Length: 305
Image (cartoon, rainbow, N blue to C red; front, side, top):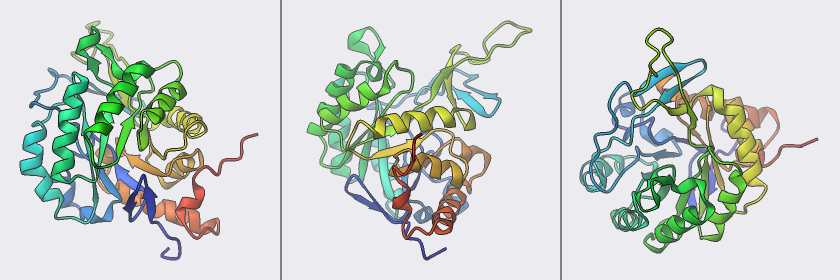
């Protein structure tokens, strides 16, 4: 298996393999570090950070669904300053790329966090635009190209590290958002975020989640994610981090063939903590079986009819 090179250059950062773990499914790595050395991974997308600490939404905030889970955790996190002081030094002990994920109520908040995290020495910043803009009546940034572009510009202005924007699938045309983000200077895009969904208890007639709706993730969303990655990769020239339902090496290979330069494993971490390493090894085995010298040769290799 060592014959196939797994190294990838993603938006200027060199990763030992194309497998990262998705934000919100891996905490800050401490728990998973009890199972294996975090240096085995290409990168870690840390749990979403906000400027001030957040308690998140009231429970129940997770519900199982066929082939997936719904969550409305609500960005529970210790805040960006606590992350820099307490979590980042621990992560830095490992040879793994650290991708900080941020959410803001205003473009200014994104800017402040980008400045702090750049100065603290993370490797990349992932900008979550699936959060409400309080200045625009709570409309999510990520559904309007102009609003997404504004946040991207502010993030880039205050960052000295690459900026990746995480795209929401809950839009009419994801390619319009992706193009706006690229024009605004983003170094990469990641997709997809969760798909909005709902589950109802037929006896109580109450939604299972206290917030009524939540984000669906897991194998159920893989075909949606592969399609959207394919669409986006065809219209932008910046690298794509593909995610959404990846649980096997074959899933990851599909995502890369669709155009992703790297992949993120999310919900599968809850099922099996070793999932990212299995995905990495299975992906390399597929590349080797196909006679490739590098896993990067898979990227964009789909042959549409």
